[in-house]
Length: 160
Image (cartoon, rainbow, N blue to C red; front, side):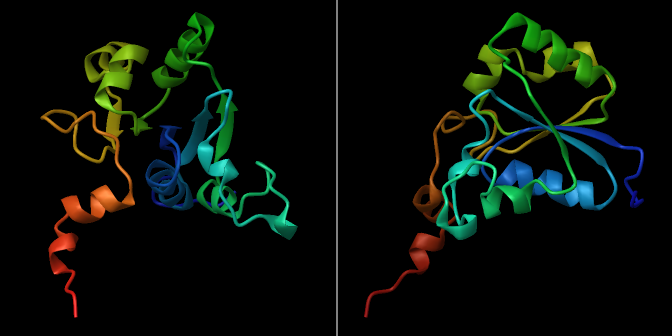
């Protein structure tokens, strides 16, 4: 097993698409033990290509495979009490949680910081959200075009 500067650090990654999984990938490559938690439906990135031999298969998405190398994974239904209990037990022995849910969804699933802190007072929670956890835009969904313009890049576009 490869060792690195984060050897001995245990990370739970409850995130999907690209940002959270990429964060987990980088930490895993530095030696942390990263466990990716997926819902029963799986990470939506599993359905994004490119695919091997043009076969759409959730186990063959090059994007998903790239983002999730060097990780272990588990499927947990956080909507079910048993799934919630299992997830809480995982957090007890973990150092870091990578989370990319919007504040409204965190509250619904019981994943707000005060509740997580009761489970594991030493847990470091890394929040990846497009518009933060508070404020008027905190629960807005975002897409590439929104992020591009919210970051000011839209002002740089010129027409000839």
